[in-house]
Length: 283
Image (tube, rainbow, N blue to C red; front, side):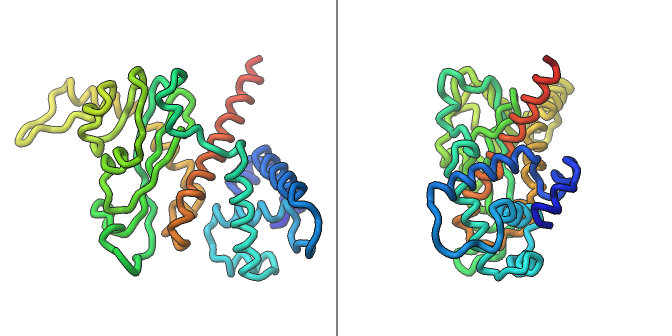
């Protein structure tokens, strides 16, 4: 569907088809126009407009079809689709509009009051070399791991980190160099045993003792913790509406982190957009 035809879609249909709101699409278009102006004119005129190039990229993330299938729909070559996707990604990731706050913001004075940390896995095709480093014993397949730190006061993603499937969640956390402010409360799952030694103001579920059982009070605490940190699972679900993160990742792994960061930043942009609309409606 080209940009002119997408104008006939309702706001809900546009979001369902491309994964972003019209306001987000308009911001992407503005950034692409600025990049085109700074580059200057010259060369062969592209076959697709800037708006269509953005739609191609969104379609690739959202549906994760092959370049060949998308190129057939848009009546261009595979290499053209590949260049368009990389160009749009590079322009967006360099902009300040689609950038995460970063791990430094977690220990500054205005650090989040409460955060949740979790790891999500994306299946990859079996690597040709060093297969055991990518094999996830938990999921029984080769995978890449993405660690998310989410501010539970506004449900925005603060920072990310990436590892291979074999790496334990807590090992990835220590390797990422993430540190929390002393007054920040951290919530995590059972995969982060030992987190309280690094950050005392943290909560993880109480493990059942060997050959024993949890008390009613322990079960109540675990349920309360699960209710608080379920928000990060909803964030994972919001990111994985883009099939490039939920289906087996076929591309070169070195660009996986860039795409995850970009989609996470787009998610943050839309969270802020919804919040601003809510406040304006209340006023």
